[in-house]
Image (cartoon, rainbow, N blue to C red; front, side, top):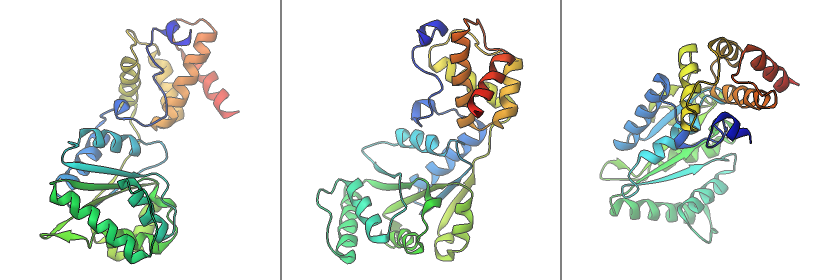
Length: 266
């Protein structure tokens, strides 16, 4: 009933990152282009930082979709807070290894075999480490750097993309050998008010909306609260549509958005 009431085909403001929800704001487009450059030219390491909910994971999902699967193997580590040995095992599991056991030298040899196998078939390997700021073990960060020592014909056999919140920048500053390997560093900033409006319209249109559901005044209130952070925008918009549905409103106005914000803060 909720979706039918607003003329939608699916919920427009889900917070699960996906390539279909990728809004190409200027800063998100630049982040996408920079990361793709690092991958296509095998530049080693890229660092993408930003506050919670700015769209880092969504950018990488869109990036993954854009890559030719015959030429790239894209691995994603979502929970990287591990000891070095467990981290290597997790990477091998992402490669599809069924049985992971043995000493660190043995596991690193298996990883090198995987990377060489991909390279021999013309496949580039991309490892994206999400939430990299939660890695507290410096040895694990060092292990990431050591992955770059696996090379062939003067080219890296693996490209690393590190995603994280701003504290990751301080962690990297203290790891000079890894810092020097970073070829691209970019910080995702929140949307401005103009792009907040475009973002909301984009999500609604993707969900099948045939008309504007939010008044311009309502979006101004929403922007002031959200500071242009997509995660917050999604939460307020989703709650506003629910409240509007329950009140049988024809459009989301400032009163509904204000009530949605209050509801979220309880």
